Length: 240
Image (cartoon, rainbow, N blue to C red; front, side):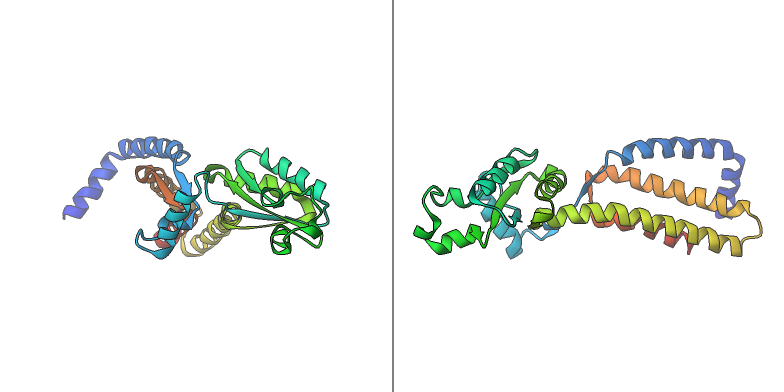
């Protein structure tokens, strides 16, 4: 009886309920854009884990930040490698670039210097740079470094993995969402007697997803896994 009374009250005040939901939808659409997404898996490691302790030690040792990108460029001379280093260091988000000239005097013939040190940075015409980029700008910085080096370059490191996860998540989630919506419309079209019902059901689901994503602002930031899978899972569970 109590349940029937609740639904009867909602039906009697349907205009008020719809108005409140419309306001909540617009508000949460704005709040959704303010929710920060964290793409760094390391932030979710337990404080007592060896990896977390190692990262803390490295951050204390490297005052300017932990090197998080290794970039190799093939078929370059020493002057060309130095030019690349200078260009990389000027990119927005790059805080430090280390290469052979930081360990040895490159004006002295390389054959006369310690070969292990030389080959750690320059071997067979390929130069290997160790780069530190800001966490807040790593995606942009990695993209600019990749664009600068072109086909001659190759990148690796935690910042590169994070940037790749960021880019792929945005693209793949959009594709999954489109497929999921089409599939849901197809299922609802087969199981409902009216063409309007699938539209109404999807609008209701969309508002619920919008409100859920907007209220994530209370957490400050969310994991990219939550950002990627949350809406799709909510759609699937609601349909079920």
